[in-house]
Amino acid sequence: MDASRHIVGLGGAGDTPEQTERLFRYALGLAQKDRPRLLIVPTATAEHDDDIVMYLERFARLADPTVLRTFPWPPADLRSCGLVQGAVWVGGGNTANMLAIWRVHGIDQLLSEAWEAGVVLFGASAGMICWFEAGVTDSFGPQLDGLRDGLGLLAGSACPHYDGEELRRPRYRELVDGGFPPGFAADDGVGLHFEGTELVEVVTCRPGASGYRVGVEGEERLSTREL
Image 1 (cartoon, rainbow, N blue to C red):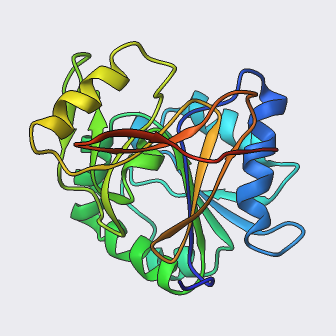
Image 2 (cartoon, one colour):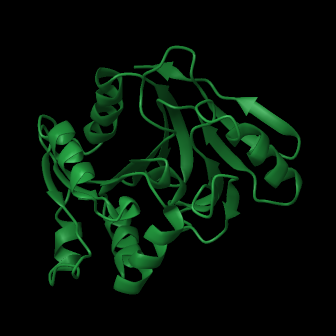
């Protein structure tokens, strides 16, 4: 286990902004600074202005946020922009499109390097899936499909919104039973905290919500601490 590298994958938001803020505080606390520098990466929603405003408002009390934009092009100082951060937030949206844009511009390599340097990586939905080798996504349509070309910082697969979307649980089970890599699922409001590549804690801001280990033998509900 390498305690200097942290990833927190969130299954989704809490039921209220106050609940969600608990998850944000938990993840940002791993940077061990009162107001860490935070890089907001809104690629998955095509950098929509409304989403950027929402993220800036939500994080303004907790961190010193800046936004990584790829349109009309990424910043010239992309590498230094990423490595000076205490944490990186990746929002939800279309995971497949996001990964394609990252790879064109080398953002995938930047995030890997930032992780190795101790920058805390966290995000919800697409921002949970992306760190794994594979994930369950609606990038290709509402029927949900398996995506197998994640960043691969974490082994196996991931499924967010486990209790928040009706198709998530049965579709993940179907995919894993059909040979999809086993992995982890998280209900909305649940965070999976990895130090290095090892899951060390599951937290939730929603009473009764949980994380799960999912394999061909079934699913195991994981011990989950309420924030």
